[in-house]
Image 1 (cartoon, helix red, strand yellow):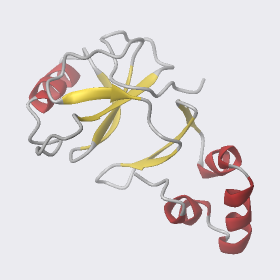
Image 2 (cartoon, rainbow, N blue to C red):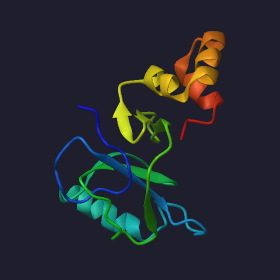
Image 3 (cartoon, one colour):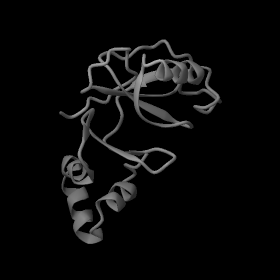
Image 4 (cartoon, one colour):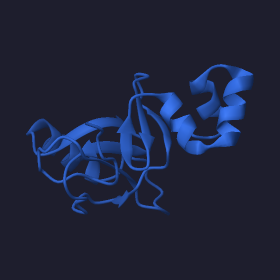
Amino acid sequence: MRSRIAALATTARRVGRDRGLRPRPGSSRTGVEAPGWAAIEKDAKEGKLDWRLFDRDAWVLVRGKEAPTCYEGFVPELPADGVYVDHQGRPAYVVGGREVAGPREVIAALGPQAEELLQKLGDPDAVLERLGRAF
């Protein structure tokens, strides 16, 4: 089952829907400084929030049914199609708000320009980076 990625997850444990969040636009704080991080980490440790992947400076991808807005300094949003890579180099590929198996599915969704670039470069992850789809 492909996971849903959209905004921030509720405490629902139904795997199959992922959500991501970013610090509030216009905020001078980075993600790790945003006041909501402490609550996000606490909820994750207590099993109330099932995070998939995160980059402390920018975003969190979490699983859940709804997109809660209870984390100060963060706003829910639908992540762009592409690859999200955490600080340890672990990827999560996203297309249309769903986690997919790999970069070729993202490239297929991006269309002919991405397919052409794949023919030239041969490396699907390099294509996503070149197209600005690596986050």
